[in-house]
Length: 358
Length: 254
Image (cartoon, rainbow over all chains, first blue to last red; front, side, top):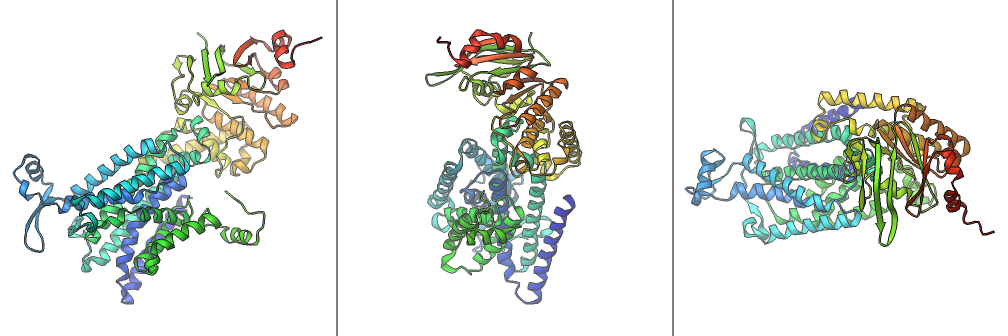
């Protein structure tokens, strides 16, 4: 089993390299931009797949966590602290080397928080919010949980849309690149397109390895047991509330990392990233990939997001994802990327009573 | 001091006293059965002991450990394991994986070590599999390890649930109607398994409707009626008890 799951990772890496080589050879390297973006979206989706498929919870608020990460990082790395340079806390941060001087395109001097520092702040904030929200909310079940997370998503959307600090309807722009080691940075520079493609998919591979390890571990087994029968899991000593909460927080962190990185890659973030339709889209993609199927979620996440970003769905974008959700729930509630799907579909269409419902 | 003691335990739902001032003790290494007509409060009593319901009053003590205010998972961690009247196996998991969950309280790999797949977690995982297979072997179901638990025959599912509960290595095992839905042969087998469990040094508290099973394997019997304890004695004495006969068979009007 172990060998198999690492073999899949190797295939995935080969595919990633293969796509890059093909696009370079065919002069279609512009595809890489959308592929990079869909990599970051896939990061949210595999995290959400853990929550929905393994812990058996639902969240229609994950765009909120994405937005918290993206917006906080964008805000901290663009808000000019120069006027406050002499005040206590700013001076302290500056001395500690957590702030950076730069100039914007008009030559104005800027003093902003270092991207790494902003990144860490974003993760800490997301983790704290996920804990605070998750603790009461995860006591709910079924559609009550769905509604509570939906409410959370709407609150975040309204906050970023209504606050001048977050640029209201315009969002935040001019977000600097995110420096990694050796002068490489996550940014939308044309010259760094290939590097960024590999960085993004490298992060997805890391995320996949971590989650695949997790679902095969003691914790993953405990999560599945909660999904199977929560009472029995508790009777066996599984702290169901704690496991659900930690899974929820973990997936929120995945969403926030994706938010931060995609914001630096795009050079900005807008309120549509926090919208409810984004959250619904993530849920739809997890559903079509097959709930407890990380690979299915990843494949669907990258393919559908790529198609959407390339504009193949046109103005029907949201309608497409809404329809996907309805169709999946009606005809293939366990997703389409799994064994036996064709047989099940045939049974469904011919009205064969042997259809396995679950 | 008694090995396991329930003292003045009470719980009501609205105006209904489901369990009222029930006290009893269980001696280590014995089988004690709780019987009573339907609605007597047997399952409520189990839920109070295992933490699924908080009691209104009273205390539950296992050796020196106070259990009455703890959540079910903490109680399991303190060495009390249970099965359910209507089987609660984990669907979508094999019989072995079901039993492996029983080892949860005896292992410690968490989110971080699991995600990083640290080498010590491999060792732990191997030990979990080995221990679980041992327990399954003890119950004679090792050959079912890789079958999906919920697709097994009903009687086998009962045994898997028993194995899962025993994988916790409990000090006290609560069995809620383990013979429900079993035929006579399977019930007799179940009786043998319960005796085997007791011989392993585990104390058993049993709720059961099948009187042949109860009378055969119990060291002591507690009788509940309308949430109150009406008798507590050896099987033989219980069979002669006038009050017990009255609640089971009704008044003699003649």
